[in-house]
Image 1: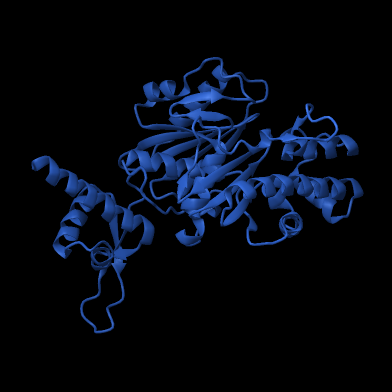
Image 2 (image 1 turned 90 degrees about the horizontal axis):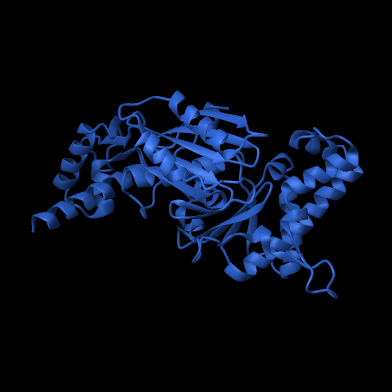
Length: 391
């Protein structure tokens, strides 16, 4: 009986904290109404959360239509703790530190060209040790992996030779905090789901395409990340493209020529500009450079094929594109919608750009590790990004 009471109390505390994450600032009376809990129960839980410094008061809200005392508004105390979130990319290590309610307070990109996994792990640990803040300090670490992850193990890493390094164990032993390893595209989808200002109703069934050296799809079904039986769901860039229908035994992975990096490299080669970046490509596009315009058009055509095939299999409510190239040339989005409509015969599923492509995987990592650190896995939470504070 005692265990049952403790379980109910714990569940109620998590539900109250969830309400504060989702609707902050919020009053105790509103939490009581939302959850159907007794006011005294909510007040007792609030007092415990306040004593732990997990929540703070923000001032008074508006009184009700019938008057009465103005309610005290509550929000998550960002100074309670923080997380460190990494993106272990093909030639870079991105690191972002976030307060518990999501707001980033530090970001850096370190280039790792020529480094092996052991050197990258040393850099990762060094970066994590540089940061310190908040009352509880570091609450957890997440790492976005451009490959297949099952639980705590990296099953496949096509762009980095992991050399049997157990990254989860290394980080757990070094920092003694919760650690999350997750597929990069899945984390980008979590970022859209948990940091977006859109209503949850529009985020229950979505596909987010994360496009860089590879092409991955983060799939959200009924508000949950769908990973598949072996963690390979969403590996759409590995789909086979038949260039010659008369030779069906010979195909090419579509990301080999249709990924963002592949398109950029084609433009660099054809223009003999090896250092051309996304902003430079965008500038040439708006100047109507024929080579760039054609390459961007080809990219949209390839991507529309991938989107169409994925949409036919999953039928999501909407599709989001996380891509530095698309972010620099937003005119690609209506082109993608037009090409998709041409292939599908309708436009019931709309395609949107997802801003902040460089940061999305780390924001998703912040969500994943915060859920784990607070033992709130499977519960909907909303986070605050305010990226402008660190850019």
